[in-house]
Image 1 (spheres, rainbow, N blue to C red):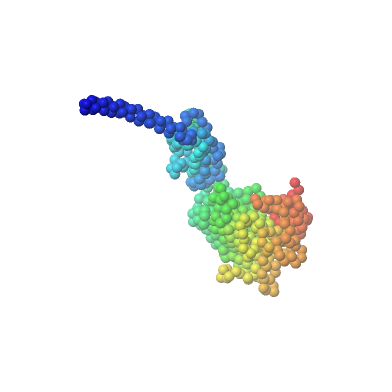
Image 2: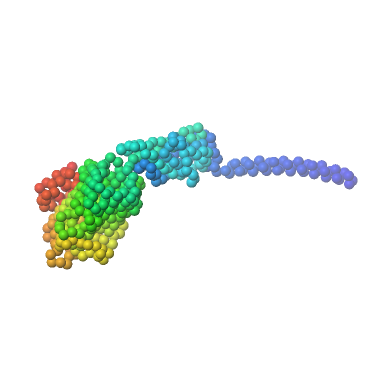
Length: 478
């Protein structure tokens, strides 16, 4: 009985052992089927022909100086399919010879392989470009493409950048009379100095680009000879993205006590801390600086800061300067005619004491140690527009009996409306101040409100009529 029992048990054990194997195998198959059934579709890779989507078909860069890299541009790649895909490769069309570099998952390069992208997911790539010099005066085009291969399909995104050769200067000191041509831009990496008794003439179309913190210091004489169609430009080196209209990107132009006979004609000064600063005290009223047909804009500080100096400003537009558009302080001769001064385009709060225009015989405390002219304080504003968001965009401050502030035929944002011969607090109706389009609208109250002067054309070269308009622009009938 014992023997039979053991045999029967063995058989049962064998039978049970075989059954266990079947149960285990069936469980594994069931688990696999269950796992497969529960895997989200977006994680299941497909080998079917699929198309990727891109947030743009072209990655384009603003004109870049050779030997200087660009900022990064973002390209987003979308897999709008239900299933995941493997992108076999992402590569620049010109391979290692391409001036473009792509950064993917923190790794820069010209080619990447086997990139997995889940269904409905996206991929972010950063694209940069570095352009080698070509010894060309005119801008030249650098083209390539970013090629995507997935499941036998090929798609591409165009890459476009303009390169510009330039004259690069660091610690540039000009110690003899010089004429600077406009064939290529000048990139100032830290400073441009014009020494005393040296005259620098700048041809029309010349462009100066300043690095962050760079400046121009004029101890001698600077004469720019821009035209309506080819102005001379002083601005920040970065032009891409929001840097094009950014504030405070370089330090600006300063005329020191030894500087004389400066003339800026058809010249743009943009995006500095202070656009133009002058302190040239002397014993006469002959202008040490003439601004004729000039645009100064986008300053973190002052557009024009004249301290104890003699300046003559006409057909000039100064706009979007945080601390003030034109400050004229200390004994000197300050004359403004047919100017458009506007601070309504600043999109953040300004303090009440940050006036648009200041005529003050007294120096601010922080400027007390600077010299001023030996002549009495004289200020004139004629046929001009002063506008902004403050109740008072003008401050007048004189204490001496022989000091004069003359305001004639202007449109002013000013709480004291008692000055005869001016228009107060009427919106000048600029065409579009948001984009610095300061021509006058058809219904502008500044039209035909000026008095005749010797300034017969406006900032753009248009002829003024016998009853001129206020500001830098003469209204033109469409």
